[in-house]
Image (cartoon, rainbow, N blue to C red):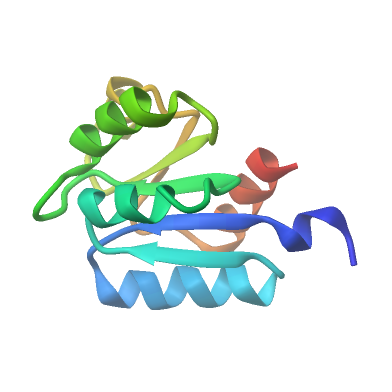
Length: 122
C-alpha cells in the first residue's frame, strides 16, 4: 500500500449529496475522509487531528469558508493545503481570498477531484 493511501482529507461541505459523492470517490481511492458540515464543526475536528488536505466549501451555515480559513490560520497556521469547492463564477478570486492552494468549480468531475487531491497530498 502506498503512502498516499493513509492520507486524510477533511471535507467541509453542507451539501449532503456532494458529501456522499466526494467521500465515495476519495474512499475508493484509499483516502480517509472526515466530514464537517460547517466551519465550526471543522474546527472542532481539527482539535484532535490535522488532515493532509482540506476541501472547503465557501457558502455554509453557522461558519462559512472565509470565516473558517481565518480561524484556522489563527489556531493552527497553514499546516494543511486548502482546496476551495465553489460554484462561484469567480472561483479563483474566492480561493485567493482565503489563501487557498487551489480551487475546483462546482460541478466538477471525479477525475478532476482525484487529480487535485493527489497533487496536494503527494
